[in-house]
Length: 564
Image (cartoon, rainbow, N blue to C red; front, side, top):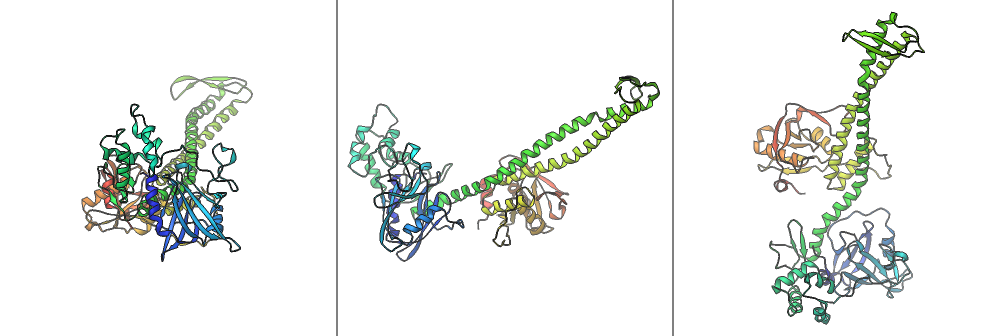
């Protein structure tokens, strides 16, 4: 990607459509991002502004976002100062990734006021700040305290520009000074240009070099101006590859054909939305990942302790033998003996049995019987608990796999509900009336057009296998590997071998072995799949299965995915 100063320049031109627009509503999604709902030229617009450390940007958006019930402080300040205001101008500072939006509004008593909304798109240092016309800070979405040795972003302080090096503005005559800032003998010309010129990205400099063929002291200024002139023809493009690249104009040095968008906002909306939403989902899910990790580690410690108990119980038979032999040779053992040397009739060898001289021989025998019975009970309990602990460990491993595959907020909520139902999380009461939940299963189509449904978590798996699927539907699951329940929702007469292999690929892909080769996948009729009474969610037993080995190919699976 290249959200550089040149991109910002083109985007500000595009946003002229909302100049003179009225800001009707301001809503803040999280700690870094907000939406301004604007009415301009007879149309409604949503201006998204974000100071996210990874996804900082601004553009018009058509997506709907969730907002907290209690608006954060920054949005409340903005509502007080600019809600109902008119956008007077949107101005880029130099050729940098800084934009000042001038807004004419009214204060609480109806007097005219002017406010400046400052956007700083600078990676992890990005910020959104509102000031008055004297650039006195009213509020910032991120605060910088006076002792940070850089600058202060706090209410009441004067706004200062970010402390960046002074660079040449390529859209003015300053660009003529560029050769004086370069040393062609030291190499790394591209990096030198980046340090000297404002708002350029490595992507743009590659394009300059592509047009020039070879950059020299004589042609560098002309090549930059020529490339800037060509880029006046704005064409929002996305080049897909190992790492997607977007820009505001076509790039001659790129090898692949681009995806072209109708506007820069549409390009940014498409590029950032899923990434931004997935990041929010990951943040939301992270707390639950910590809980599941904690429970998994607790079970692992329990398994280790139970294994120790079983190892210690291995000596129980020795204690039983001691008790039997003391009882058999009671007449030969004298009071106060510290040991008894007797013939072990199991091995026909002499054996020495330690005794407590303070108690009678019969009491010594009973003492060994008690040890035997204690260890036997301990062993029985440990074996029962170990079986349950292994099941719990598999359950938590499965949950961790499901957390890795989460793609929607609904899936996070489903796992949260499961953790509450299992007593792993405490129930948090809510005054909101709970809506009837509708599971959004993932849907695929085989080459022959058959529908394949996939559960992405235990709740979805239970719903798919126990309620959605019919007895004659075909059910798939990776063999002895945590993964999703997968069902072909058709009668056996309609299912061909190709459908079975493709459904098995889908099951393998949605499992812990999703990136492995030759993954074993079991399949059987739903009527042979049974939920284990009292077992954790998603746990089933099945019979009459067959097994196929498949290697999941993500590109092939993407082609089969049904998008809603």
